Amino acid sequence: MPRIRAANIAAHKEATRRDLLEAAGALFRALGYQDTGLSDIASYAGIGRTTIYEYFSDKEDVLATLVEEAMPGVISGMLADLPEEVGAGPRLAELLVRGTAFVSTDEALGAELMRQLPVLSPATQRRIRAAHAPLEHEIVALCRQGMEEGVFRRLDPEETGRLVFAVMTAASQSLIRDRDAKQRMHEAADTLVAFVFRGIAAT
Image (cartoon, rainbow, N blue to C red):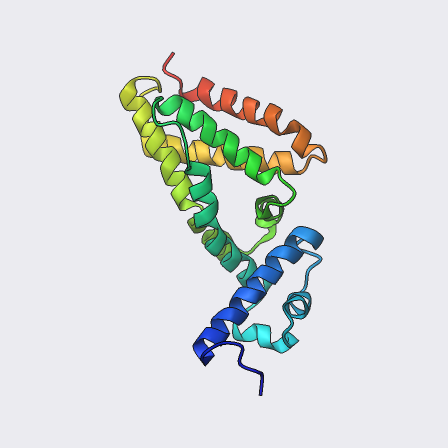
């Protein structure tokens, strides 16, 4: 019988699950999603290979769970300290820059996620999109605020926000395919902001 590493079985299972997610995150960053197997994750976490199936159905489930648990903190970091004293325009521009910077960092899971997103199953893609929903909602809110302030064109704020989020995602996917992503991040972010603002600016 496996040694219980916590005060009770429930705590032990949660600790094991956490170890597996931490192992997966480290390996996905180091080796890439495609070159990491469930057996690699189990070995890195120090558990038996078959034990991982007690926690996750397959590798996509591991990735989606990792994103679901990581994104609240990531999004909170993106939204932290956005300048309150300025209007919606500068806040939206800064948020687009931060989103681009996140996926251009080698240490960020976001870059590997963006690489794999097109080949993941529809169900996994839905889970990942849902995990990003708070960021999309914030972009929608800033678009609505900008329209109320008169700095953005009067459009459907929900549709506009979703399109801006989609453009940011597309720009991020394009950037991570570039070997010089870190060096090009600022150029890509400036292009993204200019492109978005030419479309929605009131003047």
